[in-house]
Image (cartoon, rainbow, N blue to C red; front, side):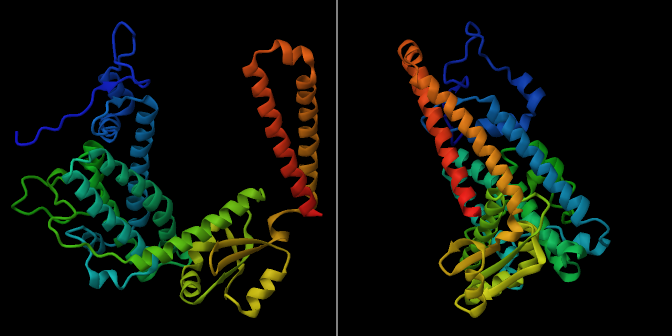
Length: 403
């Protein structure tokens, strides 16, 4: 062997050495039977930190089994929904034969340019990490990209391209199918060394280029790595920056819905204020914003920063969300909460907290409790009281805000 990679000792979850005497030995065959070989393999490889031992945490293995399920669900969406009922000619054209080039890339909309840019960043980063034997870091990056970017963002946005009910269809749907397959195929090539079984199985469900005579087998294991030489893969830093504004805007509206306890299925009104190109970007992707933030399409507007419409939105009775300099969202309070219903809920919560505070404060004022109870118990009670008082003050502030 030209290269020997030495890793730390695999230890029990608490960091102690596995021992039959201690009864903390993890049987790999039992673990594979319960969680799958890929989940165990991925947990061990991504748990490697040079110079340190590897604690084998069963919660981590369970989480990585959930990641394998997530990957399966992504593939199921692509094959069972996005590619459903398309003609044979288009299906054949979707096989990935190499990286997306600049000419095709420049024709794409912002979310597609964003996800491809992030994917190409990932390819370069993972390739560099593996070449430097930073195996754990590389594996973790693939996990984060697939879960946080592809599944949580692009798959959801692709629905506005694929389905006519969301305003999609036609060429938009074709482009979305191309990008969905390209990103999933590329990601599985990167993930294959870490999770060989599940990626090989899923890859065979995706459109693939035909087998050539040079191929020993039509297998992901023998497929080209996404970056075969030093040629830079196409990326757009401006697209990444712009789409991150879109993400921040979506998160702000979602957080406001949560803070105001808006019913999950309820659609709300919104006025988005943004300058110049950002305004144009948000208007172009308004269907995606409506779906992701659960907005009422008849009560959503995007206006120029500093305009009369923006000033009118700021003057109204609305929740103001500052996303970044120049980009804000105004959510009319009437659409966020039923004032009377919310008052009743807060008043009940305030009364309940007052009773709990009175009871706990009484215990702490009792000399019998303070003198006889262990210091740790007393400190815990004091911390609980402080937490309850903090909750009560927030509830009172919310009541005052409602008038």
